[in-house]
Image (cartoon, rainbow, N blue to C red; front, top):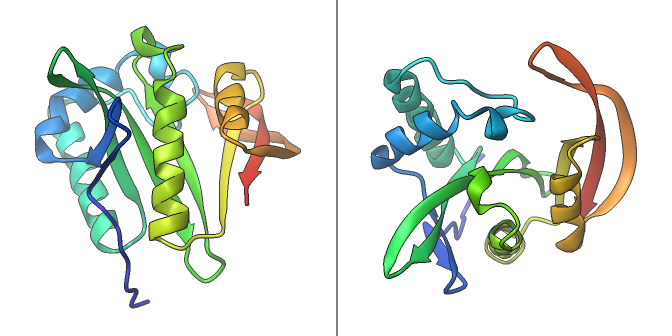
Length: 181
């Protein structure tokens, strides 16, 4: 499908910065996706090697070019230096139906500071204003209250409960299905 997209490589609210993932993020990705606090509810991780991290970034690049997924590094300004704290992406994009899913993770020492809220709101701007999407969705493990609350604070509403929907670390989890229209 040939699209005329206004995808942007970077956006910020002066506190939180989203920028397109790059090759220089391989160590950050590797270290973060080997942290059990981060991967507890993710469908990815741990990464086996730095090469695995490089291959994942290469896939993100290809998906970006193919308009399948847009992966951003979340950064904050720490005393004048931008510091990587997580990833947020638009994925599982359905251009015909104008919808996509959001995925996000943030290093645990930065939880509870409002950075996730800012990152989600910036990605909503990209999705709705730049990409002209109509509907955003998330599927979150039912016991992941932190993430459920994050998205509800950003205006998402719960639509349903999906039984045994997510298979993470060898265990089925019910998922809360949230959307923003």
